[in-house]
Length: 168
Image 1 (tube, rainbow, N blue to C red):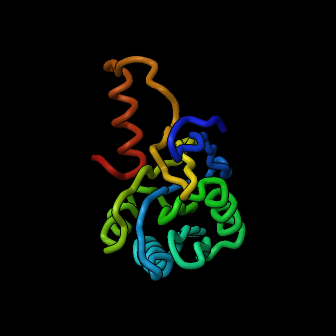
Image 2: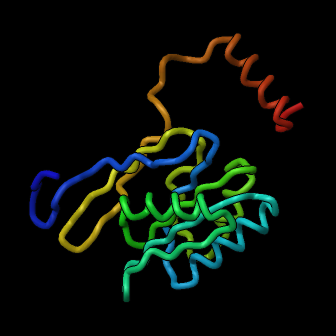
């Protein structure tokens, strides 16, 4: 990290580490029962989803709280959150569901204030580090654009949506 200015110690890029078939949701929420409410939202949305959640407290003992129903995903969520270290942030790593099946239920958790991303893509988290703590500035979700969609690309996109059952 480089010294930037008054109180700002640096800006880091944290690469979310996950297996290729694992989806990720990164967000911001704050209350001592957040981890329990996120757990309930996950199982209420997709009963067979396999997941691990890590939630970083911003006051009191400032612990990372862990929940989930898959031990490997819980451990990986904890490792990623340790790298991010931003108070009141959470990460959910999951299998056997798509983000579209979960995001609305998670946004309806009263203490959730922001979802940064919900994706299967590689994710980089831009983290500011200060003397007080860490903050998520934003995310890089996937890769930069390579061009504009053409007619053939539209056909492929619509075919995939039909295959997945999202369009007729």
